[in-house]
Length: 307
Image 1 (cartoon, rainbow, N blue to C red):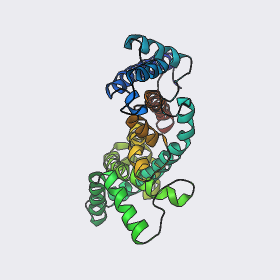
Image 2: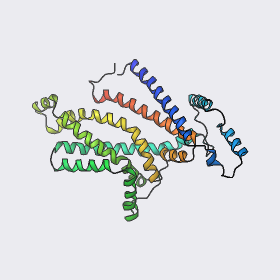
Image 3: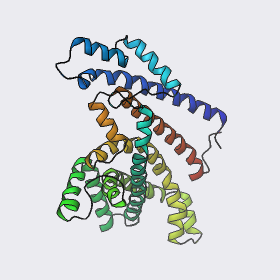
Image 4: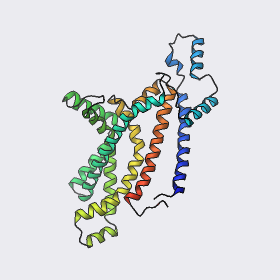
C-alpha cells in the first residue's frame, strides 16, 4: 500500500500542476481578444462597450482579475458564461457525461483490440500475422482523426446508410466517434504490447515456468501477459489526457455534445469562464487518473511498493 508521505507528496504536486494550468489558461484565454466584440454589434457605441465590460468585470486591472479568478476557484465557483449567462460549472457538468461515455468506450476498444493484436503479433513473431498487425498499426497511427471521421461518414453513413452521421442517444451514434478516438491508440497499444510481450518472454522466470511443464496458454497469459501489462497500464494513464483532447475532434466532426465541443464553441465566442472551467477540470481529471494508475501498479505487480 502507498505510504502517507507518498500520498501527501502527490497531493501537493497535484495542487501545483492545477495552479500552473489555471494560470496559463487564464492569461492565454485573454490573448484571444475582447469578448465584447462578440457580444455587441460593430456599430455599438463606446459607452455601451464600456458598460458591458464593467458588467463582465473586464474593466479592472488584469492582476485583480487573476486574483478574483483564484478566489473563485478556491470556493468552487468558476464564474458565469459570458455568452449563455449560465454557471460555467453547470455547463461543464452537463456535457461531461457525454465525453466520459465516449472516452470510456474508446479506452475499452483501444485496450482490448490493441492488446489482442499485439499478442497475436508477438505469438506469430516475423510471420504473416505479425506483418499484418504492424501494417495496421502503421496506418492507424498515420491517419489523422478528422480525416478518418469524414471518411467514415462518407462510407458508412452517406454511401451505405448503416450509421447516423452524428448526434448522441443511441449505441449506433457511439460507434463512429469511438472508432475515430480509438484508432490511433489501438495502433499504439498494439505496438507496445508486441514489444513488451516479446521482451518479457525472454526473461528467466518465463523460461523457468516452461521448464516446470506449464502449457503455452498458462505461460503466455499468467506469466508473460501479466508482466507485459505494466507498461500498458502506464500508457493508458498517460493517454487519458490525449483521449480528452482527441475527443475535441471526434465531438466536432460527429456533433457529439461533450466538453470538447463545448470548449471549441467557447473559444470561438471568447467565453473565458467556460474555457477556464473546461481546461482546469479536465486537467484535474487527468492528474487524478494518473494517480489511480500509479496505485494500480501494486495490483498488477506486487513487487512494486510505494512504502
